[in-house]
Length: 486
Image 1 (cartoon, helix red, strand yellow):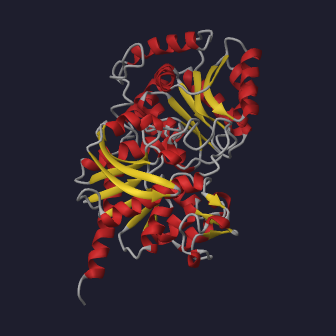
Image 2 (cartoon, rainbow, N blue to C red):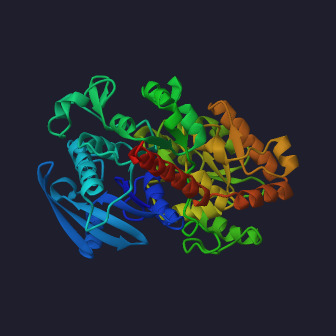
Image 3 (tube, one colour):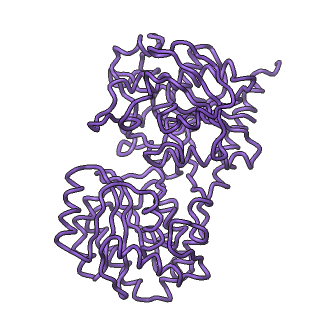
């Protein structure tokens, strides 16, 4: 079975969030299930060195205003097809934002080019390689299934929604420039409230729609979480499947992690203290033995609920706990956490930015990680926390609800608790749960038992890869049945 994954980012090459981690880990997980996967990805400047080691090149001619070439390369155990289109991707700034932090004005064309190149590979192949399935990820790849249907291809397609808040919405004046059939501009096509939505195009044109946790799949059918697409998804309810994300167990492993001062395991938890000491030093935190050290590793946005944490800080501070925060995003939230650090020196430490190596130290050195998201399709930081014995404190939503077992009385008695959940998603509920975590921390035997539960909890890709393979196989079986003579 051959699968072509279409995505705008892929770890470890280029990353802005969890999408990259998924796209980087899934091909390797599928390889162990007999699936040969390739990832088609823009050739950003960060991938120029990989492209120069390419094993095959095919010219695509003109695509979205300039010439483009497709380059095959093998790197980090992943088979890549790099869309080399300098007029679209060879630039400074970020992969979605310019140097001023604004969306690139030609993002529609940039990712339409990626989708168009993917559709060409799906139909015409690449150097003799033809996929059996096209797997598109988020709005940036949403036009790939649509272009296939526009060219009359019946190749099975899967569309994965990582976050429906980002829908690839552009003006209808781009129908021509994006090479879209005007007949598709309708309620049953890619039209969305008088504009184009590439996310909607992908959903409409795909045989199955997956998302990154079972709870998020159910939430997407509601007005609260569907963000205008709940009606469409309700009409595709039988084709909507929630498959929980996993994490790369080789990269996130406290027993082998090179970015922490001393490796540890569930059998040697005392070694975790070396990371705590290093973390306290890095964030200028005063050591404390009778209260937990909480961490946050997040984008600072309203979705992530970090404003709720600001309101709950008095409870955390009053309990003698400490907080180390790493993140970037909304300027108001950045400034608010800077002020919190100044008001509570030695108790609250803030670093604005993102540092992958530091995030490993924070997972290893903290006692608990706070993830107060208002909605969270899956979430990965709580999975890293489980792996490192850093107990997640999470809102009861999306993948957070699916991955963390609350330390309720019943869960503690049965020995299955792995962290803390709170609901509703309010500052008061978060403060109460921080207080509950501080109480449990005073019982070192009980806290240690929950840590060990967390570290044993399955967070890898094995079961999820099985689920994706099952979806792919079902589509292939359905395709064969359609071709079989009556």
